[in-house]
Length: 277
Image (cartoon, rainbow, N blue to C red; front, top):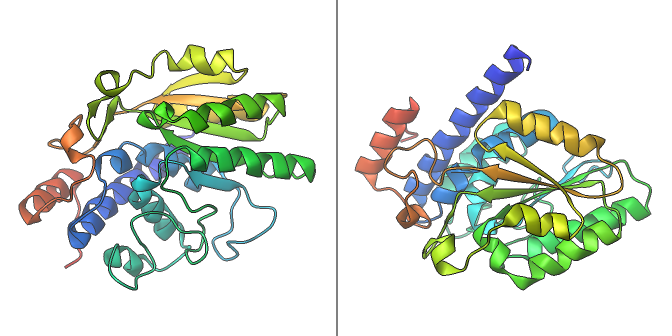
């Protein structure tokens, strides 16, 4: 991989992590665990892979991104803010009454958000619909979507998973953020989702795996997805919930809890950042 690109992406990932911690601290609520686990995926998409124009968010020829696990909105907001879709000062107003950025992505008012999400499974289904629409229009635009692994417990996911190969949606790439945890604990204790790879293969998908915090593997998988014709691709990304903040890593309790000041300061120290007070 190009070393300059790798360094850029690593830099962006660190910035996104700092911004996630800070915005959740200021909001006093939100979802850090699943936001931090998806940082490398969104960094790779927004700062390398996707064809988007932050100065023209509704550009017809753009690639689309749907955050199906909408509760991880902080990672999407951090990426959009860093990309320049809106002033980064908006991040520090997260979840405040009247602010642009609320607890889940909202497509009508937030520049760069292609779909309002929150009810698990619906974002993935919408992404399939978007890909079908673009395919019907003979558009070169691509659709990317990110699911949580616990989200795979939703039946609507598998209806969409059946439809995408049927319509040969090779313009669709899905990521599964496989961190193994959901709000109530380990996935396998709540409702087992494995074997994820075999299930998607059975539905007719091109299935790839990647270390979800390794840019080399993520970008390699994205390139293979782009080269795959006649079927959609799903990338099972092995990740760590709360990645980058030691006391949040692999802890289900950090699914939906904001850090207090002491925790924010420790996280920022680990990430080498400064607060925005």
